[in-house]
Figure 1 (tube, rainbow, N blue to C red):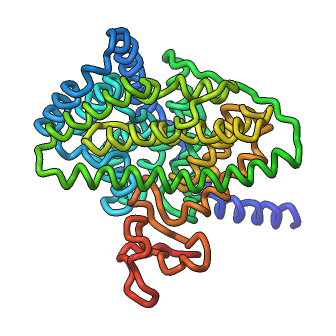
Figure 2 (figure 1 turned 180 degrees about the horizontal axis):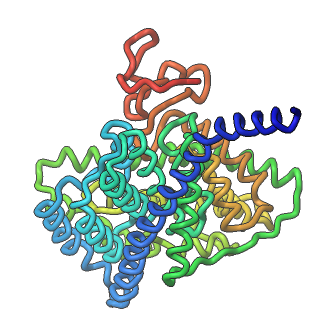
Length: 445
């Protein structure tokens, strides 16, 4: 009798677990296929961008050609795909408001325009476009499979994860970024598993198709002095995050007020970038990988590097250049951390550069967990406790601001900001207590 009862209980428990098993199988399939598709697309984009940069930067005084190149690039975008303006914030907006719909037809123009902007010398990044490209390909894949709106949103998040992972070679950080970037104060745990699968799939696709990644373990000796420095650097990076976001916004508004056509605005912006390159330094153009590498290797970066990189990025994106904003955030954070290390005469200048990189990403994008994990994946686990301290402080100090205005505020960062809950970052501070909230109310459960 007992074996029969045991068998009945086993079958009962087995059938209860079947929905969970089906869920795992379903999202393993969606995660792997989305990661492979997004990984192939982003890999192609990165290879094209690397080739264009290598060729164009060999031209003597290439930055004198920035104005006409940006002018022609703006004409191309205006003619073929005027809808690609708005940058990577469009993917956040699409998930919140359009059931994850992103038009596939704009992808070729987005890739070409981004490659032209960055290769010519525009200060922009490749991570945002890569994440947006992954999201767009994932959106098309979800519609092809005729999934529900809820499933399509999750598939698009998987595309973001794969795109981010392919660029940095950080599959875990890519997954966390994808489920953290959509909201302030909330993580999409129900999407975390497929996002991890997609990030890993995209990473391995890129790795086996020739994309190389450089990892550097920074050895840090634990000390209270370094912990105190991380606290102060977190405060500093929070302030720099606000400066960065405000500068990007104000520069965009000033260009919008000009009663000129978009190509002419791009021409003016190109002239400004040429002045920065010729009279300040060409290090602030393009991806600025030299600044990043110098900082994380312990070299000295110019004291005003964080300022000029911010200005160059604001001009590039404000005048209509196409590109991402995460790479400039990372470079500015590295420069700020490096400067802090120089000012206090620390022997841990490498550590402060990495901590600054992570802290500014946390403050400007509201993704503190992803920032810490990315720093650990790229530079070793020794940096984790100090990066965590700095990232969380920067995250709080930056308030309800973001380089992605369509982020939804799920929970206020402090009691004084709880009235912003349910709004987008764009509308933060505009809703009075007791007033009606944005229709896209976010559950605080």
